[in-house]
Amino acid sequence: MKKHIALIYRLAFILFAVWGLTEYMGYSWQPERLLGFAPLTDLLCLIIILIIFILTLKKEPAKAFFEIKGALTLLAFMVLIINSHMFFRFFTGGYITAVLLPFMMLLDFLFFDKKGNFSPRDLIIWLALAALVAALAGLFDFPWLSDISDFSKDKDNLIKLLLGTLSAALLMYLLSCLFGGGVSKGTEAFNAMLLRLIFLILEGWCYAKIAGASLGTFIKSLKYYSLFINFLCFLCIAVTVLYSTITLSSKKSSVFPRIKVCLAADAVLLPIFFGVYEGSIFGNGLVCWLLCIVCPLIMLADCLFFDRKGAYRPLDPFLWLIIPTLHFLLTYFVLRPYFGLTTYYHVPYNAFALFGTGMAVLLAIGYFIFIINSFIKRK
Image (cartoon, rainbow, N blue to C red):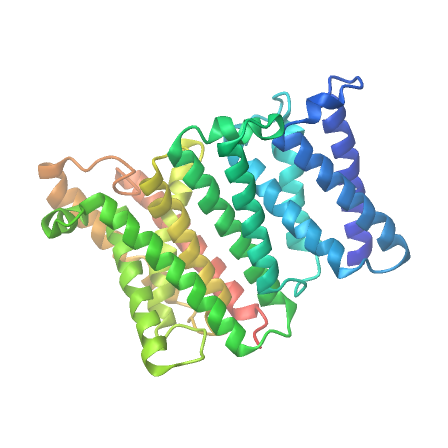
């Protein structure tokens, strides 16, 4: 059944790709117009999907084809980052090539690719490919990389592109390990440690940019919810890494998963509210983007991928409301008259209506995490 659904989906991808690329060429034969990163990536994706579609009709395609498809999926994600401003502009010219086809590639990977196909070597190859593309765009004036070059004129955008691609590569690799089977406990422990070290490096760099060497500036910054909850996440992950290092533990789960998931759920409010109020999660300064988008999602991924099954209790999501509730009350009634903290980007909610919305969203997030943790298959 899944094979037939995959065939139908990939046939739809092929039809959309032909339509989108034809539209991009102006409904005439102008192949030079395909010399852009987005249309060229889509063309390569079309070729590999077409090959896999044809081979699937006869037998299971070789693993090498899915490894190539994985690399192209990562390039498709880069296209999505560059064109994030077009996410909800459905009738804009070029929407199919800039957003729809790359997004379909990601969905194809998530739902139809056989998990367990990828190894750490593949992860290294993907990252090297992404870094090579970004370097070529920055150093040379290649027409097919012009959209990356334009996007990366702002140094922050280039870093966002690389970090976003790194996150996507790690997510693809971890998903493959999680659902693929055949992964040793030692490998999973290594994957967990890798993800946590990346998190600590990103958090440490952000706080260094915000506070420098001033302890007073750092302490004052904790009055903002985004910085406060990230600091608690930093402490939690740091203790987990130190415990694993000191005890030489091969366990991938945290020593206190219920505390870690509480902080992760509270932190995931940040990207949700930024996405709603900014209209694009990629439109903020680099430090803000890392603390409010990337790091909370890494925390969530840590909980989903590495916490043991049954680690959380049914009423835990209600307990996860405590930290943001206390912070809101303290901020609104005590600090607000003195510091004017009324904007959502310092606190995820600037009034009681938004506070209620935030708590409802957090409760939904909490039970989503609880259900995933309860039913996911662990080895």
